[in-house]
Image (cartoon, rainbow, N blue to C red; front, side, top):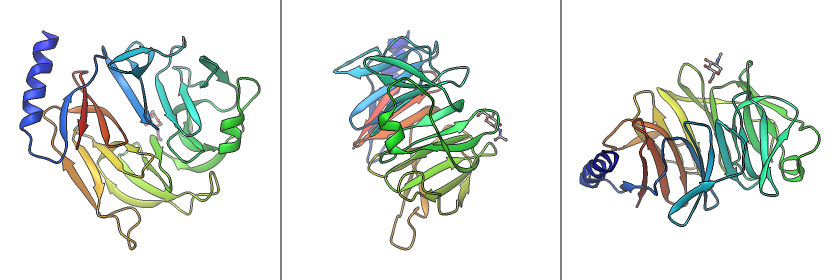
Amino acid sequence: MKVAAAFIVVLCCLAASHALTCKEGPRFYSPEQMDAGLGHVVGVDRYKRPYFLSGLSFYSLGSASLKHVTTGPSGTWGCDSYNKVYKFVAGNWKVASGYTLQQVDAGGPGQVVGIQSSSNRTQCLSEARALAFYGTGSLTWSYLSNVLMYVSCGPETCWGVTNDYKVYVAKIRDNCGRATGWQYVSRGMKMIDVGTDGSVYALSTSGLVYQRTAFSSRSYYGTRWTNIPMCMPIKHLTYDLKNLWVVTESRLLLVCTP
Ligand SMILES: *[C@@H]1O[C@H](CO)[C@@H](O)[C@H](O)[C@H]1NC(C)=O
């Protein structure tokens, strides 16, 4: 049944005329959230088990129960259902005391950003602190912005969405230096992922996929959202090195390439 469903998806996605071609990704049962960075692909399933991709298969990544994972220049990080923060150290997850966060992103040039649970304030961990953490002691985060629901950073900018689905962007001065004011971009998005190359992909409230386009010297955050046709509603997405990974609402993993 599952195989048949996937087959139909692949046919239908191939038919879509767009610069990206999607096909079924490596087999990942019940994916919930994915993050790709620096060539690595990590994710969690609906049972909060973390995995990483090697070759054509997903393998368990350590033994913690996590609801969100991220990988990037400052390592591999995650958070659990109690919003405790973890870093992957010496082959397993090490919990970090300090703030509790409901989502973390390691996509920036070195800093890690996250959304504090309960207050939903965005917090930032500098590259030096992020790299140095090895599993003992507490992390010191600095305040980066007001209330967001989802945040993702690239080499120069951080993008966030609020709980009423408004999109904001900020230029980040040398990791965790105060954001230069958050700029309102548009509305209607529920999550955003910024690649390590600066590409920005977003997911609308109705599960449609958009790429931010028309970047220029006059508009560092672009002026348009260009729809990338998908044949099914999408639940989560991540982008790295020309690979766009999407998890459908029906929990199939697709990978789209140019
Ligand atoms: C805080 O985040 C939670 C989880 O994402 C969300 O349900 C809630 O609406 C957010 N609250 C505000 C004020 O953004």
